[in-house]
Image 1 (spheres, rainbow, N blue to C red):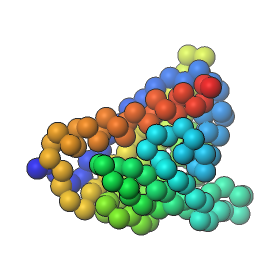
Image 2 (image 1 turned 30 degrees about the vertical axis):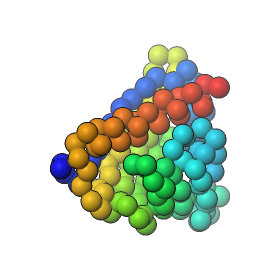
Image 3 (image 1 turned 135 degrees about the vertical axis):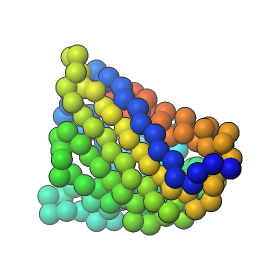
Length: 146
């Protein structure tokens, strides 16, 4: 078994302006349309500006359905959107961010994620889960460019 806390990061160039990338990343209710593992996303709270601040998700993970609720922080937009978990069933914590910056006629999108699971995973399962999580960056790129 390996450590319970896991993190990963990746980046990709998207052929779209920064504003378009931010708009898709912040449209949480549409995640089930393009993020393969997200089955449902429901906004639970909105800020004074109307942006979703608390979103509840149902997703597939490790061969089962999982539920978690994230709080979003827009204070560093348009360069960074970050989040942290406020409730979850198989995770103790989730924190992450999308970073956005203009690059080569498009936008470089950086994805950072840290997850602490309730139970440790065998190494091979953990590596497979990491690859699946980081593939969401490619799914985001495909959605923005479509």
